[in-house]
Image (cartoon, rainbow, N blue to C red; front, top):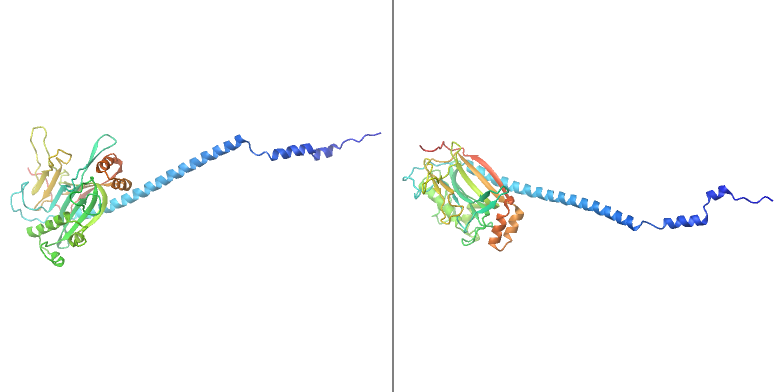
Amino acid sequence: MKMNQPNDSLDRGTPSRARQAKVGLRSHMGFSLIEVLLAVSIMTVIVFGLFSMFNQTQKALRATAKQVDILGSGRVAIEVLVEDIQSAEAPGLPLLSELTTTTAQLPHMQGTLERAYQYEPVVQQLVDGSLRTNMLQNAFFLTRSNLNWVAKGYFFSPTTNFVAPNNTRSLGFGTLFRFSSVNVDPTATSIQDRYQPQRRLNHLLLGNFWDNYNTVLNANPLETTNQVFNLSVSPLIEGVIHFKLQPIDSDGRPMLYYTNFTALNETVNFSYPNTILEREQTGGGDVLDGQTRFRFFGDAIPAYIELELGVLDPEVLARVKSMPNLDVARQYLQDKPGAVHLFRRMIPISTAKPISLEP
């Protein structure tokens, strides 16, 4: 009898129940723990890399935006300063007496170091180990608008957009104010009579200019009735830690008060016509000692003004303002030399006559 043989073709095409169960079991097992940990580790590395990249991009974007803001405000301030200084003019008033350091005659241009609010300059150590002294100056000079004389000036408040009381201690920076006044008569009783444009300039009118300038320097703008201050003064830029005007003569030489230290108590003051160069003396032996203040009389005026403007980083400025301890705030500023953005311009004075050292 012929026995039945299994159908090989059928067996090969149709898996047995055991084989089917084995395949089904494998399909429901999923990933092993090692595979999951490996996948999570790879994903963590990718996410961390993307986060770092986005974080650096965001920081760069914020830094760029901040830099644009600083450069923009600094550029605006520089342009205003350049326009004012470039049009400075000497009125050519006759000298009333021989010029000395104690002369009572008023100059038509003057630059002095800030003295109010117990001012002390901020000294910072740079990366190369050298020291940078940030100093603030006040300035006064004359310009002309058509045929009318206009007095211009720049001065500081310690930390805000208002001039603080005189007993406020300065942190070494402040808001730079711009003073601008047409011909004035400070003795007039009404504000309408005080500002009367005149075409002629004499010593009396120059004295009126100086009286108005000194008035706003000592005024308290917190008083809403202070019309003189509001009409003459406007804030230009905040957070200024360095502001210096250096006059330059026609030969490109800085007009400074030179001291010869080779001999004891011997000084050498380079002399210019109708010009007084004085040595700042605080009596405390600080870094302000030896700096030059300048005064110009008659027809004397420098050929150039070298302008330096240092502005604090906005984040550093905000943090310093929030510090209640002044000593801690000053130390924080001293440790942040990279937070000072420095602008420099050499400004030619268009109306200047040649001015050189006298023989």
